[in-house]
Image 1 (spheres, helix red, strand yellow):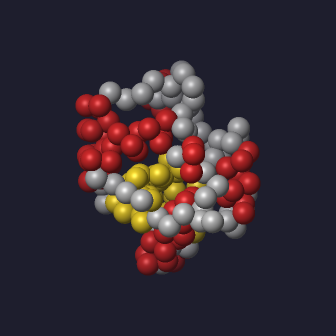
Image 2 (cartoon, rainbow, N blue to C red):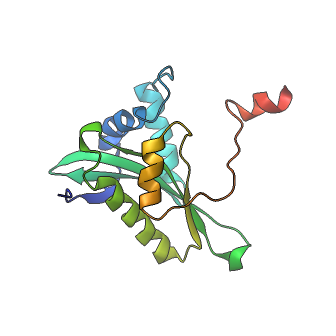
Image 3 (tube, rainbow, N blue to C red):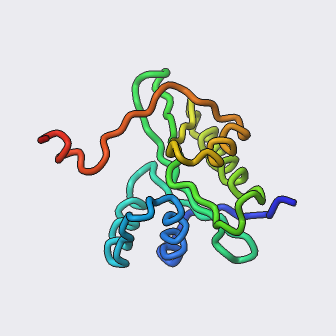
Length: 157
């Protein structure tokens, strides 16, 4: 039975729960941000136009999070695109419909802005997440390339 959730914009009071959820996405050896660094980064991100961090609440508890970032351009008749990042559902709540409802919310926001696409990326090792996204109608499209670490370090090496 799907859990009913409310999706809302994250507030500073949600930050520790958001960080706990995001830790589910991090590599095992990745250090956690200090509280001061996390607070500063959260404030910076939430002040950016077109970048929002959301939480999903069920029964008064934060059970999921994701970021939705809108990207403008001149191609595609100047319609925005959007990217879902840092999507995580609490370990004990996975499989209960929370992720689907968060993606539905993101798709509604994209529709309101007239976006021509919604994209996301997922690490190669996350095969269960891939099945989940494909079950929602996402399909593999093209290739994703990245430069790990500091881009400045990569360019100078």
